[in-house]
Length: 166
Image 1 (cartoon, rainbow, N blue to C red):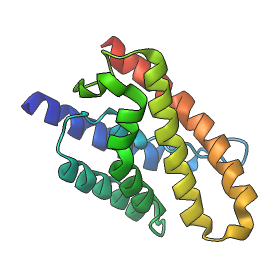
Image 2 (tube, rainbow, N blue to C red):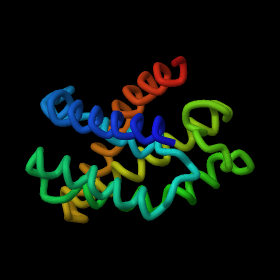
Image 3 (tube, one colour):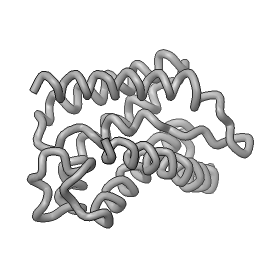
């Protein structure tokens, strides 16, 4: 139990530091910044306390918003995906949703890709909708959601590949 909590704290701090120090200033193609800190929400154990998880996600989003001087887009998107995460786990993994650490090992690759893709797409859609806060810019919201989501998915897939091999 203590080992898992230490690992979660390590991923929390690593996600925040990489997001703030590296990925916020990346500007791939001039406007795409990957949102890497979502990896903490993805690898959090499936059978953990939902209340604790929502509070940790809120803290993660708040810390990122404070460090990047963002008006709350990260916090809101983290709360939304942490709230709907159990439904996405059941949808993506079905019978295997009971596996404690299903994102790292123990499930089929197709299930993990579906779960990661849905989580990233919903997070980014909420994030950019709150950031733009205007329905007249729906093309920009969708463009940024898709392009940033693709880059974020690639980075997270590479990172999860390294995590699962350890």
